[in-house]
Length: 150
Image 1 (cartoon, rainbow, N blue to C red):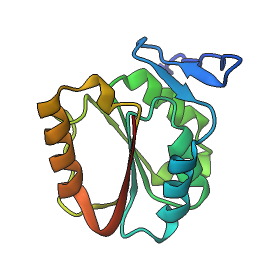
Image 2 (image 1 turned 60 degrees about the vertical axis):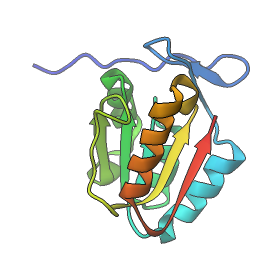
Image 3 (image 1 turned 120 degrees about the horizontal axis):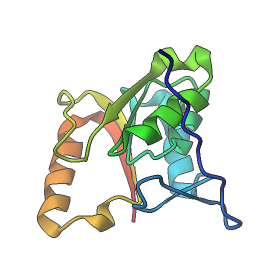
């Protein structure tokens, strides 16, 4: 039986889109730091990882540039919306990983070329931030880049 499609909320006047789990907002356009990482991603030494992707504004931009993308969010509904928003021809390069970062997802060491963590770490305690940084730098391939926006 086909699933009923979940709709992304309409962006507010300021461009922010409320998350379904009421944990925050996604921007409808990339900030300059996220844009710089997306621009670097095609020459990165591995896939683009977006942690806390929500509806995937950065993931979609990286897909548009031809990148392999791993999108993570704690709310699987957000990832379903991202999947539906991705062009069908790009879905083969999109991997969805539902779960709360840093504990509920695992990747191989050195397996990603870029990591974007946007508006996530401010929810964490100091020890959780330290664990998150350890996980990200374990996953990051040599020559890769990380952007953290908080």
